[in-house]
Amino acid sequence: MYIYIANILLSTIFFKLSDYFRSRICLTIAVLLPVSVAGLRDTWIGTDIAVYAADTYSHAASSSSFFALLSQFSNQPPGFLLLTWIVSRLGQNLFWVYLATLQLICIIPIYITLKYLVGKYTWLGMCAYLILIFPSSLNMMKQCIAVCIVFSSLIFIKKRNFKLFLLTILLAFTMHQTAILFIVIYPLYLYIGSQKIDKVIKYLSLGALTFIFIFSLIIYYREFITILADTRDTYTYIADRMNSNTFNQTNLLILLYMIILHLFFIREGNYKKNNITGLFFTAEYLSILGWCAEFLSLIAAGLSRIGLYGQIFNCLYLVLLAKILPKRTAIILQSIYVILALYTSFHLIINGQNQIYPYSSRLLGI
Image (cartoon, rainbow, N blue to C red):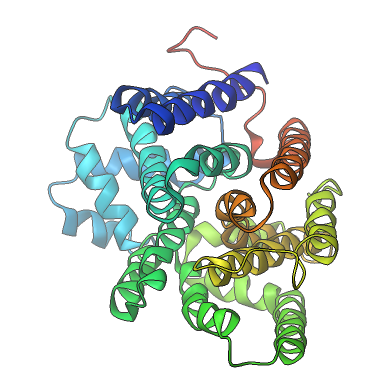
């Protein structure tokens, strides 16, 4: 576990130094730390390496062209195959470079998006990524790339550029098919940020939307995954294990904490209204939705994969608390959040989620 703790601590420190001193060297170190942890890990760290990554890379390295690879692995997302084929040009014996690249492709859109939206507080959002998303990225590689690309669509949402937003979602779709579900983020942002809609109506409608979304996932998730499993081999693993329960109640801690935060601290007249208010409440809503899906994996195992798209917005939610609340209050609430997130994440890792514990690396000698 110490390698994951050191990764979070050291990388966050260097991200902080990068923000404070505007140092590219510190930024490079901050990025290379998690990239190295991901790239240099043994191939049993994360079940999806054995499920598809190792085999795909091996065939890509020996494939004469991308189109030959595409015809051979027609069941894989084309964007992910293209990325695999490009990296495989380096050679078949450089699988660790491939794993490192997959992590780098996750980090880059997260960092750029946070830098654009929050500036000097980027380090805090990256800390949230390292705690909440990084462990999953060692296993669900394709999906985490898609999740991070979906997150980057916030740049174009903020600019009100629907065409580029749509292209971003489609790019994420080429990495993992579930990304298409989150095309709703754009209209959701416009609705939440609208000043013309009565507050009570907005709360009631969002509550109803949440209920419908969660209820539909619970009822139809099995059918959704089964249909995908018929056309995509990577979903067969989930379909075969839908009756198993990997749920952990520690996920409930952050969900309850965020609800308490909203009810007692983020209410009318108690927060700063500015140009990021709509963005904050969008991030808050999607984060809560993500934790709801994670919580309800008790009923429908595998919902956590959908919830991951919501959890990524915790990276922005945590930072924007400082933008809408008094500084001292924000620091206290953010600190409690980070503690709960650390406890939740480490508890899940130790109990086998994503099968990334204990960490080992023959290349590093550990």
